[in-house]
Length: 159
Image (cartoon, helix red, strand yellow):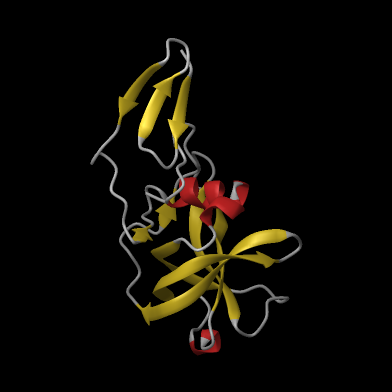
């Protein structure tokens, strides 16, 4: 059975028999989308895969400041550690972020940010979060995120 998700109209169409189901009030449409450890990598992957759809989307999430040597002074990666196997080996994943006072935040310090997704360049086109609010916070209980799910259904607004 084939299904087509209408991004803006809230309809799911069964293309095999032309049925249409209207989806209303089942998916919130927040002004600022909040990323959690449960949806973090799904959204990270989707935004990287379909950047143009998400430009201008406001998001909020928590992570730790991670820098590599070739970032600009006003940039850092807001990172989480993604578990990649049953032995709890991890890799760093995250969004490149930009803010005027980036140098005020030390490597490995935990922060919560709110910002909007923009198209940037770092060895190719990538999303960059232009931070409008940033504050130090405590490390969350669960610092790890899982790999993206095969069951995630992308939409035009991050949920």
